[in-house]
Image 1 (cartoon, rainbow, N blue to C red):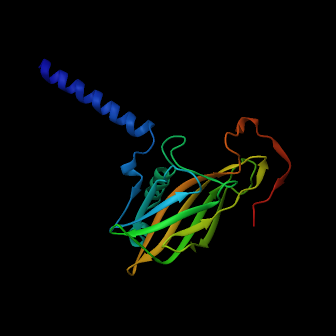
Image 2 (image 1 turned 180 degrees about the vertical axis):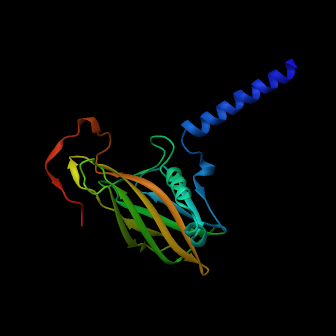
Image 3 (image 1 turned 90 degrees about the horizontal axis):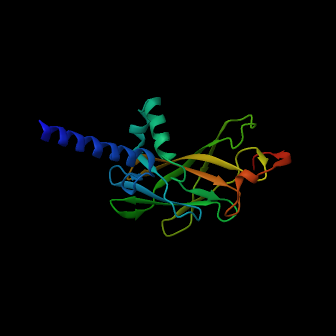
Length: 207
């Protein structure tokens, strides 16, 4: 009886630490980029060394998801803790860099597009979400980029906004979608956002 009690206690302690590991620490490497059918994308965000959290699905599978599943995916890609996902530093490099892979080989997809849902950087912005669509730029060597800009009304000297990105593309006649999230800002390195200040006049989103 005592032995069973000890084993049960050890199990509970291990389970507790596993829970802490997954709930309160950054997303582990093996969960950051999920692929399907041997298809995945590698994405570098601006000059940030952190990797985004990417979820890839067939378009057919993704379109069949209900709202609860979509919200689950959104929760995954925006990270578990502060600092879990990268940031586009607009003053340094306003691009994201994308490469597509099939069975470990870098390839060129067909019909690659990007959709961005942006979330207002300030509570005073009357438009809480905006939707932007665009095409990727082919940089050669099977590498693609997309340049971002400020999408929210800017009320303060420095802004910080969240972008949820969805890339759709076709490989070998089959449609896929990859979802990830990133922040972006216009602040120099080591800026203290607590010392931010209001602009005399808000700036409209960049065209």
